[in-house]
Structures are given as structure tokens and as C-alpha cells.
Length: 320
Image 1 (cartoon, helix red, strand yellow):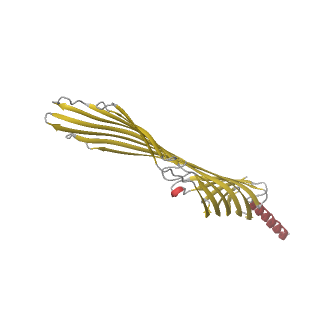
Image 2 (tube, one colour):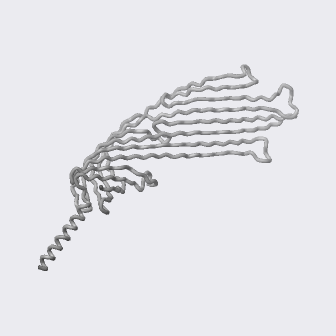
Image 3 (cartoon, one colour):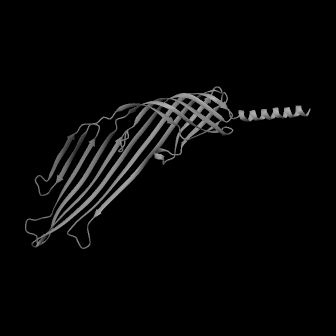
């Protein structure tokens, strides 16, 4: 009798253990969701979410999956420089200049893929699978740079009984916008890929699991031709004036020069004009057009590559 009781107890214990293990195993109708983390990120100094994955098991061994990935980033950098050689005891010649360059970059990526998994080991906490996937990935870049500059030159010369003072005041703003690319040479692109993979999931607690994946990917990438447009607006005043006993005929005069032009890389053309207002000249106002052309560049290209990939170090998922 005692033997029968012990046997029954052992059998019950085995059933309980089997049931406890079975709760980790995906069954037909199971849906799992994952968030893929990369603790290293780009250049191993950023943290980012690499994607979201949903799997549907239509049997214990077979699953369909959809994988979404996205990333939005950018940076802003401002560089300032200044120069001033004007001293309290020296007011005859000096230069004061200030320059500020602000650069803003934006980048974004989007990925969508659909695939199939066959689970060759689906027992207890460990789940090993193989499969294939087709997908699309797009990367998009843009940038903007604004260059602001101002400078003042002062020069005083003495001749006999009078002084001549020459001042030049120059300011300009130059703005460049990149489309489908940035100033670092990145270009927007579209990529289609196919990959074969093997992976594993380890269930930590009930429906919670972590995993990783290794595969071979073939991709074809088409790069968009990046373009940029630069607009330049400049104003310069050349001021000449006199102090002391000024000879007859010498009068103060200010010559104002405005220069505006636009360059577009898509057609390689620079178009603009320069307007000079000089009261001492005839005619007082002159206008000169600027039209130059250079070879436009087209960096549209398509590349294909085969590479081995390893998914982010951590895949955190939940079964429900």
C-alpha cells in the first residue's frame, strides 16, 4: 500500500512539473510581442529602441511574424569665433570680428519586415527556431547650416594738418539647406532585403522571455541624389571721413555694397546680383548680375550586399 501511495505521489509530482514547464511553451493561437533593445547603439555611445516584433503561432512549431523598426535623431551645434585687436592705448588701427555658425542635422529610419519561423526546439524554458524574412528599410537625412558674420576695420592716417579715417563695416548671412542628405555626406536611401536566420528565446518567468538572433541578409539599396541650396546676403559700408584742417574738395563719403546670390547643387548654378551705391560716382547706383554655372552632380546609385547580422543584445518579449 505504501508503495502505491509513493508511486501515485511521484506521478502527481511529474504531472505538476510537466504542467509547470508547459506554460512556457507557445501553443497554437499564442501571440508574442517583443521590444528590441541595443544597449550600445550607434558608435557604442547611445541607447535606442531598434524595433517592435509581433509573432502569431498557428501551431507549436510554426509562427508568422511582423517586425517594425524606427529611429528619430538629430543634433544641433553652434560654433562661435571672435577677434578683437583694439586696445585702449591704440585707436589708430584695429579689427573687430564675430562669427557664429549653427548646424542642425536630422535623421530618421523606418523598417518593416514579415517572415516565418519554424521552432525546432520548443521545450521548457528554451525555444530555438529557424526561418526567413522579407522587408524594407528607409533612411532619411536633412541638414541646415546658418553662417552669420560681422566685421569692422578701422584705420586712421595723418597727413599734414588733417586725418583720414577709413572704416569698413561688413556683415553677411549665409544659409545652406540639404535635402535627402546632410553635410556629413549621408544620403537618404531605400533598401529591400531578404534574410535567413536562427534564434533562441529563453523564458525567465511565465510569459516573459529574452532572446537573440543570428542570420544572413541580402540587401539591395538605392540611394537618393542629395541636393543643397545656399543663399548669401551681404552688406558692406566703406566709410571715408576727415578730421582736422581738411583741404577743399575732401568730403566724407559712404559707399554701400549689397551682394545677394543663390547657389543650387541640383543644376550647379549661382545666380545673384551686386548693387553699389556710391555718391561720388556717376551713376550713383550700379547693379551687376552674377551668373555662373558648374557641372551638377548626381550621386544616385544602387548597391547590393550580403552580410551576417546579429540582432541587438537584448530582445525582451511577452507571451499572451
